[in-house]
Length: 327
Image 1 (cartoon, rainbow, N blue to C red):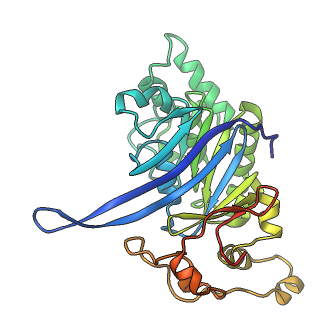
Image 2: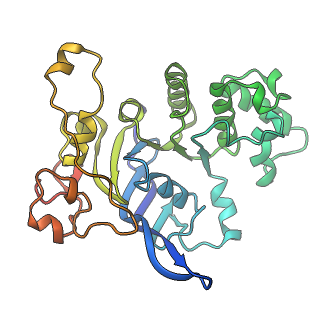
Image 3: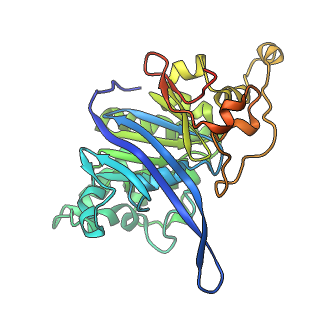
């Protein structure tokens, strides 16, 4: 992992993203799906912040709010000191040229009718960053940066393997020389051996190009390998943030402990002695989250205070923050 600067590239303050629930012919609003419910965090320059949690907890929505693909319900999104949350669409173009996105599905995120050269170079065209005679050279350079042969530029996506398609997606994300890249589960759809190659490529690019990553995933072993810090999300809220090693060696929140206990250890002697925490019940609906701590209906150490009081993130030392009244 690369050396981290103290300068913040992203600062999220009390971010909320609610999606209205409507019914009837007049589409009357009857409630909200609280996908992201009042979260705050920062991402430092050249840092990789891992964002983990179960499916549906709001990880991808958080990433899309930072890219301003969604206009947040409330809160602030500061990118390099500029507040994106209230910007109009015509003002966002210059900011988005400094951000890139790598999507989960390398099969669905590439246009099947376009050749690879057009796919990779499209951001240059959209942002008007191509110069006469330099477009082809830049696309060739991007192919080489991600480990693809420029002779493949005239191929269409179905002629590439899954790992090669994800490399195309990475090349496209790098086209405008961004400082921040949102990685939305970029390896979850790939074979394990290919996952390692893509993770190593992302680390090499970060070191070489000075990139900052928000790495969204549900696989905690992958996040442990690539992240400087890790934020754990549950039902729209961040419940724990810590340095990667600190989080994995000393988890404080009951939910984090349960997630880590589910990671298999490739040693039968250690695995036999481990105690696995099995969570009871199902994840509540984000349309009707429980009062107080969202995790209390499934928590084995919950008390009456947990049912009525929303826990705030508190610093327990060394930047290890947790939202739990029992800690």
